[in-house]
Length: 371
Image 1 (cartoon, rainbow, N blue to C red):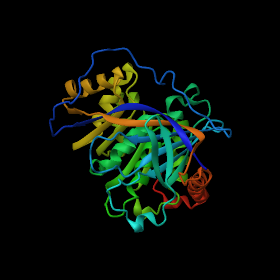
Image 2: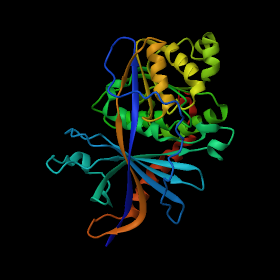
Image 3: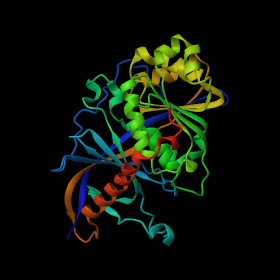
Image 4: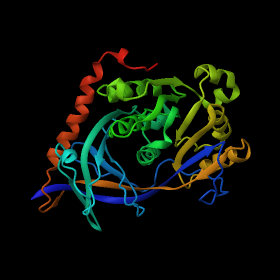
């Protein structure tokens, strides 16, 4: 009898908001006029924690009837004692009617089975994994909300995994926090060597020095094993929206006068007083024919107010669409007969992937174009 984690499933909806000065498409969702902030945390949610203090969560794009499966799903392994998360990219299992590629499956790890009320759920095969260190004391410390990772960054990585053409030119992320979103984007872009990346550069920004220090450490560790020739150059800069809004010249100096074709912000619009400086900063660094992509919970009023501000005050064309995410809270070591899978083997492989990345952390930093 083999073991696999059972799970608890939640269905979450994130709204990737796109805005561009060159095209006009009808919004696909009603924009609420409610002005009450939603809480940052989901009430009554819970982790299932193993004896060694690890809580596992699995994220996948919700099936929409499309015949093409997304290239990866994401498992989060949260070490609550060390404030460290390991993100495991998993290749979804092929459909029963799809031909199996012997070349791709030759080195793949065993499939992972889990279950919910609908029966067994295939978590797929491990592709690679990466460690992300968070900051002690979390949102209650001096680092604030940038101290931890947020689900909108995972929704963003899953979305761009199926929309690689949306990531192009010089890319900048505002409010990058400890870096998980852009790190996953860069790692995902190296998975399929048949598809050429159109990203010229990636710039990560945040307004908190403590957060940026941890972000730099995470980027160095996560990408140490990725040859520079296979990824874009990376810059990390301090950019605070309020200061940037009050002095757009200073904002331009910080970014070296650069304008960006792709501007990303994940879970940044949650305080109403930040709507104007955030919106003005987003628009000021966007190049002609560029696109802003914002991701956040669909029912957060400040997010929707930001959409309205960019549309009405800054005359940008806005598109709203919903990205539906299945989130599974995994229970450790529940048994499934005949699954042919060992939780120990799978966990060891994921740890080895992350450890390999970690061992390369001491590599010559001259290999990186990181400020």
